[in-house]
Length: 456
Image (cartoon, rainbow, N blue to C red; front, side, top):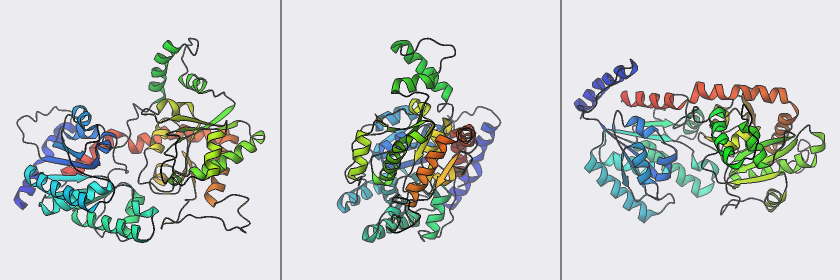
């Protein structure tokens, strides 16, 4: 096995050098190493690894493994890879998990992959254990959000143990960002060497797709059918979209792209927006909140009745619903607000940045790497401590000023400043796209991952 691995390492760089020098490579005569990518559900293959699998398939025989919820065949067709439906379930279920583990072990014994690379918690746990037992030579676990961070008690202990077992069975652990890397160390999840690929994030962002100009062209075509705006040269896609949504130049539109759950900061955002609306006469522009996501509160979402009432009834809040393509909504907005409790390395602030929006984010993993405070947005205090406990003002705290938490107070101040200080807001907006392109351009992330594989 060692000789085989040495041969793989020594010979993997030949096609790399030819590609880097712009020469085409004919792989038809070369037997590609088999790379199996595992996620719990096909939706993760479809969204988290979109385009990446096709890119890697030029160099490896890529096989996608996930539970088929309806898009697995679509992934296979788009990425040009073979896919396998696996009986993986996200919730903990001893019986189903044992069956899935047995399935994966038999699969890896049959396929004999050179590498198994897993993402998402449950799929990664089962894939790493099965790959270790099956003696797969290269077992890679990419750690994204750490689920235990927002839990307490026995559930926290169980989830931390799952992370430890997954890391133990992997022989390479990749934290999605520096914050996740730091948490793995501080919480003593693993003592193995940890390597962040490129600047972090699983898949990067295609800034050619996430572009104001490209989005405006799409809206121009839409306008030819709707005739919402009179023909103008040049066509203003942002003005068209704001007019479509009922916004004027006098409105300052904050956009939120999130599920209706407490951990996305919905309660605090509703509290802050309610106060902004009450004091809107003191602001140069009217505060508006554009929510892209389902209006219904998810089961166990823990949204307060007061927050639900305000978000449902206020004329300052507009629900756009769940959208597959959010670009036109980002184009219509003035800033992103993202008061999340926990993340691994979130996509939304990167997408907003690529669309030239400044962001207000919390000081949590990923967010505090994407956003440079004062450069392309503002970082406000985290809403929870490192153990997942809410940080609230004491009832007699003189610093509270009527706010429920330090995060809510900072969120209010930041949103006010965005509205009042147009020059500073515009300066941060001007920096946003460049900073995303420099650090998270999709092709650069893919190439860094390929080079990581080449070094195995």
